[in-house]
Length: 557
Image 1 (cartoon, rainbow, N blue to C red):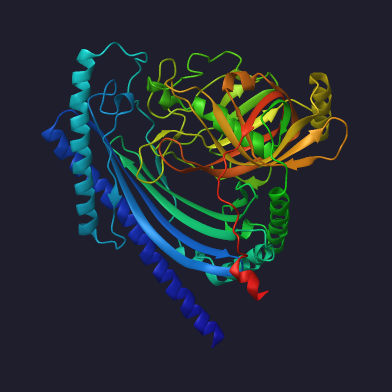
Image 2 (cartoon, rainbow, N blue to C red; image 1 turned 60 degrees about the vertical axis):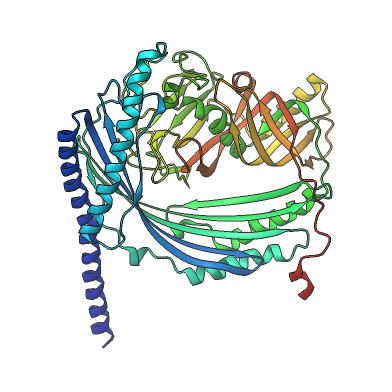
């Protein structure tokens, strides 16, 4: 009886999977047929229409969250985001010129009703065309009355026709056990509940299944699947002077089974809780100029924010951009012992899953490994299908959040160094440099939560990296001292030339970047770096006092 029941169950599963798979394939056929129909009709109405692409992000998300040992939410959602792109004019000049766009986006029905899906495609394509036509007419007028532009490269370029199909997604097999996840999160966040210093102690879990469709009038047909799971633990407290003090840790893996064990995450939560209590009473740092070490995670964020954004080719079409490196290919931009690669084809770096991985970008171009800096010399930019003077052709770095307009974006940033130095060697160099400069201490930036940089011409091209865990390293041998209230600031070109050494060990920061075209997953892997001169400023803080009353959940302990 058991064997027979199992057989029936498996047969039903195969039938259901077959139905789901056929529906997923049907969406591609609808997109292709509608693309051809809309393109032919628009071309008949307006001969300026020369290219259309359709993109669908079919995203299923499972979420669980818990705070102080209590589950807040268990939910799931599914959405299909449809984004048409309509281009008018020619490859040389079209409606996207100088960062102008005519895209719209909308939602497709989750039920596989052909009529409903076609209606949504038609409405959004029509809106995209009207926006593009209006912008194109304005651009033609502007070209007649404005001065010549700095960048004379075309607005779009041809790309290789790509045909790629991932198999249909077996959703039932991928669905995580949300009740078990909830029990894990309760156990993790109970650690935070035990600390009366904390204002928040939470853990969020998100598992995402994405099936992306891309078709265009150049003949590309792409279906790509992706999965990713993010587990995020977060705690914060407040110092007596009102300063908010957060600490976080993010875990990423392509599959839930690759996440660390519950016991390992609980151990990390204990460490975070203890550090937050120490931060509450840690001394407030004053502005500082002197030597410092950035850990691998901290330097990864540093290179992403300060260097990577200045390599994004499409933004260099914008004459309001600072274009720091636009004319510097073939010149030294970093110390000769450093090289940087952007590699969306990498799924792991040193055995760690990295979430900047993808096969095809959002313009239907295969992602490519790009050696942007070799031995300190700038070699290339991150390119979309939009050329710039001196650099043409995409290298698969057109990316956007669902519904957005693709721009040049980073993927997996990987910094490597020619060195045999350990982090202990960097520490010795730091202490020696402190003595040389007459500084009582240098800084060790152990972790950061992110950062930002200005790249425009109308504001100073400065950066701000936001550390969460910083230590004073004393030249006289005293124990390291945890401090708070430090922001790492500076200007990029001067800072790059102050990097004096790096370690042979690497670390990885997985995260998301929200610049330009919206939030996209990225990673940054880097060795620790020693910088002989950095500048810090005081972090902003609230004027609100810490809570007068204890947390209510503590009354029951």
